[in-house]
Image (tube, rainbow, N blue to C red; front, side, top):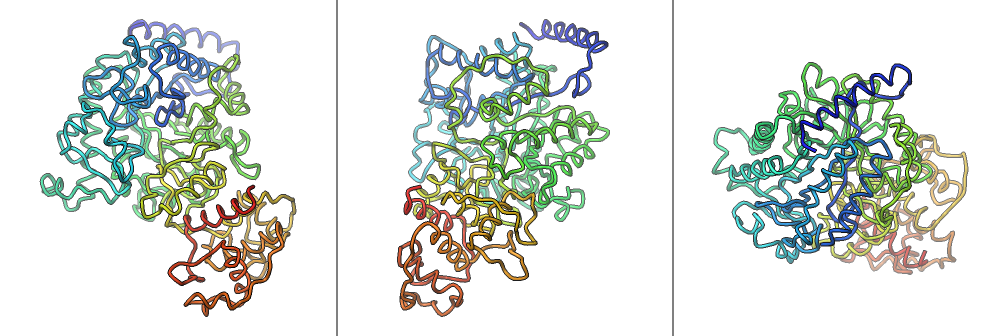
Length: 633
């Protein structure tokens, strides 16, 4: 069905809806064209296909299942990831076929099958629009120090054809250098190729721009950075140029094809820039050199869908605060505002979590409809929404979809998640307070296959197996953006929650410390720890739940928790003489430290126990993993 025919059908449908609305009260709903979107991830085979295959029948069948599931829920826009890295889920003269599609980069599906053509045709037959979701700069996703993934790239990959275009970042991954005009042309040409060759409804990008502040582009800056006062300003300008050129060229190729961005939810914090939001989280402006507010206000894009992946009332980054902030920024301009929603967080959420069930998502949806500028939302992501039975039923009811039999491979529930934004647990990535290790749940959580985190470099080889195992068990999680932040400090409540989880401790009590709010995700675990004698607080019935935990306090908690499960012998305190800094161990902690040394739960580092140092995420994972191995729980 060509675009003109679809427009006519759309008008007729609108007229039908208007007529029906005279006699049927449809609530809740936006006026006219509401965005009810969902992301379908292909990277790591998260949503499609569930496993790489060249089979035409299998690829069609899985597409049919997802499209049917979307129709059932009332979804009207699918954001299909068609370029997860430097590759393609469509016939391209620029990028090779994706390894996530067929198993080997450059290998095509059988019999000339083109998945994107099929997706568009099938979705349009169900009155669902399809947006091509592309990741512009990312070349590799799971590369290692041996360059295994990079070496497996097809010889026709632009990264192999133009090695001068690429930069290897500190996470061992390769990226196209955003400062090169040749790279900008490559990305624009590739987007136009899609628009020219497919009846695509939109081109979509999320928040993967510069991967971080440590990007090695000094030579490019020396060549192209004259006239800029800083490398940061130059980098932002590079991204500005790309976004502006993409919008112009996409619209020149097809005025009806829309172009939009879904950046991380925080442009800048008020403490950093006066115009920023009243938040304390990770800033796209400073950390990814993405001036997302400018793109929307200048109308270089047709819509912006900030990923507000936090709950209403969360102090560091409140959903309501950010939704209203973005609405205020877009007053008076034609750029549409949708919200990227963390609907996935209800999948497997703990009973104590605000994300448990559907209530938080419903509150956010209702808020969207109360803020005039917001005209829809996009849910992340299909597999973690459609296979969450209560959430699927809720969205079906909320959007007025019609229930049908659920089909498709339920193994998607056992895939890791990759959010299109830095997802956080209870604190945004790189927030002033440490992001917790516990699964509350974060965008990197999995219930089966371990996840490879880009910042778990060779230096952290000693922690990789424990981290991956605990992630697979749902005890710890990443902080988002494919990272684990192994060097970040851990908060007291978060470590206690991990202990409760790994030991399977259960019970209920209403007695808690005075500084532990009842609505916090860790409140029940802290109350349980208090009632069981694992923790006694810091005095005056206070616990300091969000303060960083020292190594000696971590060991005291651990030893007391273990004592509930096993009879621990009191070790000779002379054991501590093996550590050169044993004199710094507080009296209240000495016996606990000695007991853990005796059973090899802790061993120190270079002859030191470092009792007053804060515990890092990597260190805490080692401790929890040893407990897991000890009890084989």
